[in-house]
Image 1 (cartoon, rainbow, N blue to C red):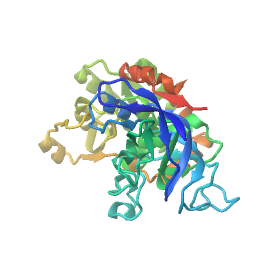
Image 2: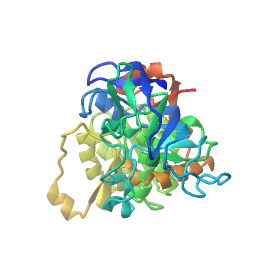
Image 3: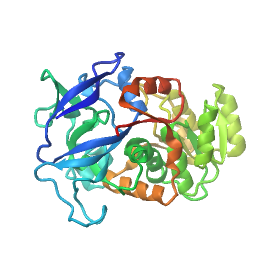
Image 4: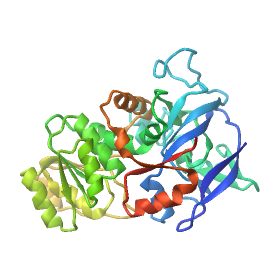
Length: 380
């Protein structure tokens, strides 16, 4: 079949919205009709040349869709069995796509750490012959970013990457569960393991940072401080559960003083959700002795941050890396959808604007300006 998709042909080049040929799903795969996809900073890292990725791929890694066909060997959920009642998929399921399709067999998966699976299905952007399902009309192979390439009208993905959730979940929210929400909420609750009454500083109030705030609030943290350069983002963070907001003007000394006036001696937790070496170093400085700094934001490749090692060790601080919010997608996605449905996660706050596929370049420019939290592509 033919579908439209946004193709990355190399850094610093405009994306091309092209008509592409998509094959039927092979063994262990599913065909998904996309309903929504977020525009995430990880895609911008690729487009701006900060992360090295193969050209000739459909970008997008934060999306949701409806299952249209099951390939051979895909487990089928019994008819009438609700989502979550047993494993398996059915045609018509609303699924959130995970940008890692855990194999279930490696040491990490067996240890409950699917987010660092060493052999996820569909790796290499599905450009290898056994995974290739998409081509240009002239036959040129086209891969899919993170194995899911959500900036296309339809996509073939590994069945493990398609996680069914409550079909009543809105398409925009389902899409954002696929990356920003899971990454942020999980960083607070599952990586940092914030406990009730602990103090939390969140550096960066974009889509992921505000999701961190929601996770900290859900965990019962207090106070929760959000830091950003954009007053509008901080207003959203406060609506999401932040008890205090602090504007960053580039004066790090003044920023430290403002934060320490609220949490004397330092916070129990600082979570960095931007991906800048300066703010990573700041996160370590803002925690109390024995506190935990959790790195959530992603820097350009190859960048290094520095810490005062003597002081870090002397004060018994901890530094954690949070990949995908330490999530097992098959467990985390339905759980987050249930929390949203119960009114415990105000995820609608994250959606700045709904756009069409042709509006992606404008959404990327808005992200460069730090304008808003998340633009979401709607496909229907």
